[in-house]
Length: 202
Image (cartoon, rainbow, N blue to C red):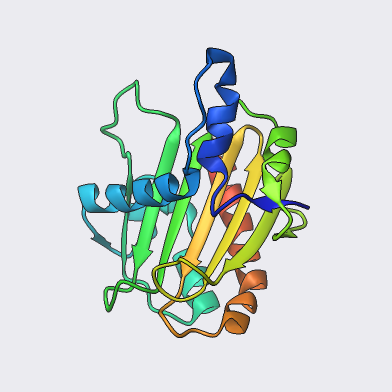
């Protein structure tokens, strides 16, 4: 399978789906996705972790499984756009989860609807990722060790029925990349739970 061009393919795919409108694709979808997740967290403010009480994509995340997988105690979550979003709001949901002890580790989840096909999704992936079985129609994972702003980051993304999911777990500086790779199985289970919860909510 191929892997994401920089970090995250979601917004690039959305732009490709809009090519019929002669719009140019975003130059840096990865940064945009991550920044939007962070902005959503700042706008709505943190809530004590019960993820089901947070907005956006947060209720799709199993907080107990997240903590047991990472060995961390995540206590704060914030998501958007929330129930007060207008009708013109794009079909996208975000969530950012933190421990409250430091900026990292953190988890971000980005969910966006797209008109792009699964074939387009796969074409936009490069050769650095590994495939994930039994997750959506196409799925991948990759560990980033450069330009994370912290330690290594595990990125897992998948496409399912016109929806793109992007999950990113960023570790503190100095974390061993091999230890992050060891989390792939746990995050695969977490992602499958997110996919099921999203489908049930739909």
